[in-house]
Amino acid sequence: MNPNIAITVLDVGAPSSQRAILELEKPRARHRLHWIALAQTTSDAAAEDLVEDALVRVLVTWPSS
Picture 1 (cartoon, one colour):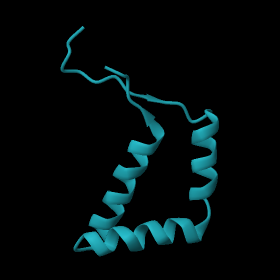
Picture 2 (tube, one colour):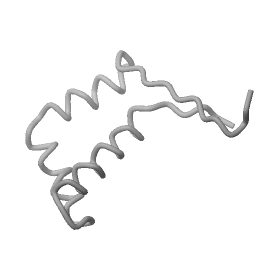
Picture 3 (cartoon, helix red, strand yellow):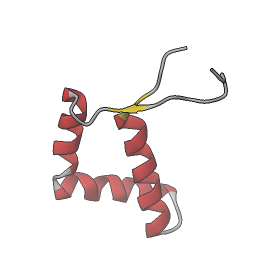
């Protein structure tokens, strides 16, 4: 296996993923995340990208070294 290739797993059925997804369905939670991201970026589009990138990092399981 190539050590430069990262294998990731997204298990939307995992309890932690389910809790995160339920929270993100709440409009206020998504709005607050966008507001925080907008304070760090220069546009709505960049803020949305930042939120999406952060959510991927939360929901994806990275293999341990």
